[in-house]
Image (spheres, rainbow, N blue to C red):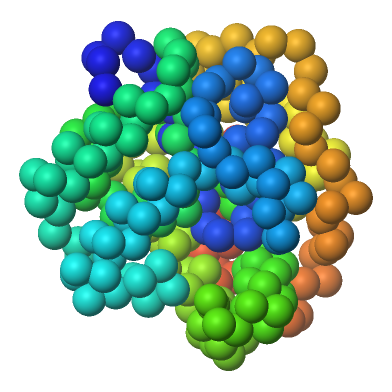
Length: 238
């Protein structure tokens, strides 16, 4: 993609509110291109480029994994980089957004670009329930994992998010803080010297099935998930 363009990357685990944040950023003038704007599990769309999903899956599969079973490391070939650039070129605009949770488990595909990263987190119990519900309704397309395995996957993705943050700090939005989401997104834009363009009406709190109270902590089966959550929530609170 052209070096003069600004590329905003939304990083976060599946079912963690990344689609809502992407929609809000789109309201503030960031271009996401021909993304999915409606599907069964995201009434307002997951805001992802199908071709980018396919590229990530191809890279993961070639390395012996998938989005739900990521390999420990990923080798990226020159053809992967060329394909990534072709996909990004389909998005028109000076400030471009890209969003796919798989970016966290394919970091080697992105480290050569200067990304304006914005992280998004959601508590592991809510993510686990959402993933399990989607998997149960579409067993032909999604793995049937135990609660512990879903939480371990949450740890994998969010450990990668923390590693990216330690490599080069960026703002992190806490999706559990629903009432504060507009302000958090505005602060994230300001971190990268991007101006919010008015208010966003994208986020619909009625679409979120879990509340923001802390009772979810008693449901978590993987202790590392709680420890990691506390670290990330502290970053989001700064």
